[in-house]
Amino acid sequence: MGRIARSCLQSLMKAMNLIMGMVGIAMILYALWMARVWQRDSQDSSSHHHHHSASPWFIYTFLGIGVAFCLITCLGHIAASTVNCFFLYCYTAIICLVLLLETAMAADIALNSDWEKDLPEDPTGRFHDFKEFVESNFDVFKWIGLLIILAQGTAILMGMSLIALGSNQASSYDSDEDEYSHSRVRLINPQVQQPPAYVIGDPVKPAPFGWNVYDSF
Image (cartoon, rainbow, N blue to C red; front, side, top):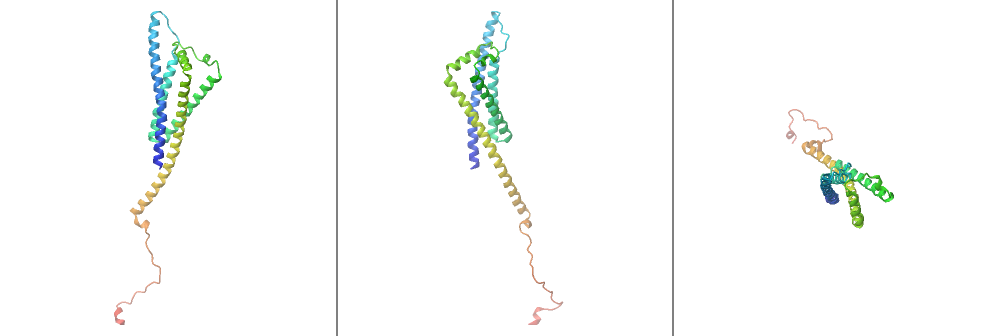
């Protein structure tokens, strides 16, 4: 029963982890596309002697977040496959940190109407385009965000469950190993299992030398 429960938890954790991996891959592909377009625009603008001194921070940030999601996905897959407590602790801690950062960003955007002023200027203009695209498809992105948060929360619960299940199985394994070692000692040394029998009674006096029991008959 324990193996079936652990297998189900591993499969569910891998499925939730796969969602974050797909989001990370999509972000990497979109960042590479933005970098390609920005490079083409930069080459066209250089022919007209227009240069941008600012760095394309939005593209780098988008690419970095995508790579981070993919690395977290790899760590989660390793943790779910091996059920190693160290990897599970690291994975749950990182996902909790990501959730806190996402919550802080969402709260800042919702409560601060001038949050765009806190960001540096984007020379590529892709940040403005992405913002308009999100606003025009807000319902779709809202469900995507909820799906990501749900997947991360479920992955944390699955990781904690695997940690608890792994510790319980480790303790039961230790007890079984101790019992096996004790039984093995019994098989190797039978005297440990069956102590010698002692007969307690009146001592028997030896017969006199040369006396035969048949002489009395």
